[in-house]
Amino acid sequence: MAEQLINGQVIEACQQGDRDAFQCLFEAYKDKVFSIAVYSSGGDRALAEDVTQQVFLKLFTAIRQFRGDSEFTTWLYRLVVNACLDERRKRKRWLPWDSTQTTVAMNNVSEKKPQERQYARLEVAEAVRHAIEELKPKFRLPILLKYIEGLSYEEIAEVMGCSKGTVASRLNRGHSQLAKRLSHLNSPALWGE
Amino acid sequence: MFSKHVTKDISAYGHGELSTEASKQFAEHVLSCVRCRTKFEEIKLGIKLAEQLPQLTAPDSLWHEVESGLGRDEAPARVVSVRPGSSWRMRMAVAAMVLVALALGVWLYNSQPGPHSGSGKAWLVTRLGGTPKIGSESISSRGSLSVGEWLETDGSSRAQIAVGTIGSVEIDENTRVRLLETQPTEHRLELARGTMSAQIWAPPRLFFVDTPSAVAADLGCAYTLSVDDKGDGRLSVTSGWVALQAKERESIVPAGASCETRLGTGPGTPYFDDSTLEFQQALNKVDFDNDPVSRTTALKSMLDHSRKQDTLTLWHLLPRVNDSDRVLVYEKMEGFAAPPPGVTRDGVLKLDQNMLEIWRVSLEGGWILNGGGKGLPKGAGDKKSLKSWFDLKLKDSEKKK
Image (cartoon, rainbow over all chains, first blue to last red; front, side, top):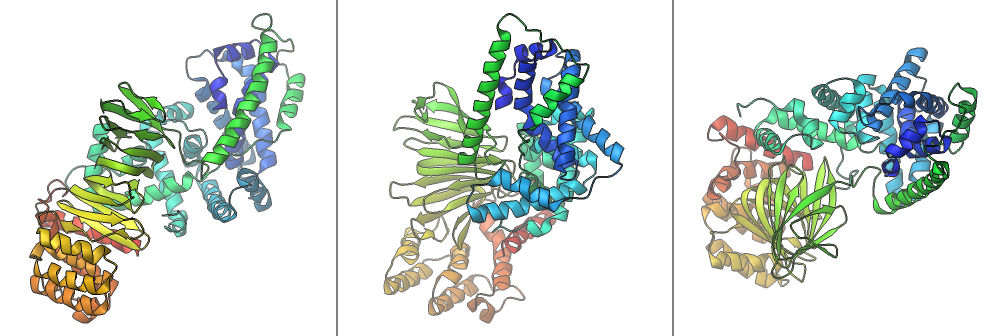
């Protein structure tokens, strides 16, 4: 993965204010940060761009405080999670879902795939995004950190400031709620079984 | 059956976050507990759905906005290099990063069917003898098998694969296998030729093996699967159950039984290994002979050599033979075990799915005991446990419908 190119030297250079190094960092993490922001903001890409921008601006100054006590990624995602929660508090509630923006986003991700498969996957992904939007943040964020960022339970616990057991429990409840809301998608044909 | 419920561990199990020992205990409990099994199926669906969330791409313009924001903020305005020349190196790193990201994107696009499939996890391979190869590289003692990679043994080499935390697979000599998928909700190998023995401690339908003529779906078991150079195969189950599937045809094979598969035809009919040679030879013709007259003759011979426990074979044959032969099979079965209440001769001959399933469930106890009872959940000696075991088996078949 691109973020594997981020080593101690790059982080150290960022701490010294090197903008080229910071761009390096930005390139490595921008898509993941942006994805979490989109999913956390009800699919509002403009809002997600704002949140992503805020995260990286904050990162540029805050990185000087990074002491390497934890993994850089967990430290970064803590910033992302806090930014998303702050944004939510500011707006009190999520903005309405914009289906046009969603479709565009999905098409960007999946273009050039075989048509039928792409269509089925878009339908499922669209439904999943809606269902995830409806989850409470405490269930949604572990799911995003697991499936978008690929973090382990231990890393998610560190980002969210809770125990591994709590992460397991919240993921369980999140999965369960997704399954209940989308039980109509439990078709072997849809999953190619 | 009386062990603690494991519903709180289901996601952790699916994500490989439990230790091997905890995974074993989890699987054992799920196999015997209907409540946890039902919850497991629900959360498994939730995991499958969550895996469909794609990572999005940030717009290209975002860096310019961040960069202009940096100018306005109180962030350090001065660029301080770590040491002379490092800024130049950083520029090169940025360029490299973009290229890597691009290449990665192309690779992901070309190699993955879904946004999160092929999680990039590798399976640990241990050399058991000789010099097995992963791709073109020989394994000295241990290696790792990634999605898409082939593991191959020659006439003098053997290897063992650890299937995440859910089991292990031994690869015999002259065998070629490929890892197709390793996800919380599905682990899949392809056996192109040779022989492999799997021991899986997982809830049903998590571990699959694709062969040229059928797919073996694990139902919580241990088994040996072999494929010859023509693509034909043979499955022998030593514990639990395995479903052998191809298109519409499915054979459910319990411990102590085997099943042949043929390229183009799919799985044949399962039979107990202790059935007579005459029975097995006749069954082979019933399954794979192209001549209908020869098949009917073989069927009669097979019925003559059948025993009470061979209802395993007879039940599977009911939908696979023609109407007149079906009457012969039914009458033989009826002689061994009268159909349970609610199952009628007329319904069976018309292949009423519900009646066939009820009859199957009523016969399964005998099939399990014939296989030595291996694969039954711990403590299944009591009637309550056996009933719940059968209940969940029945639930499986209802789901498939």
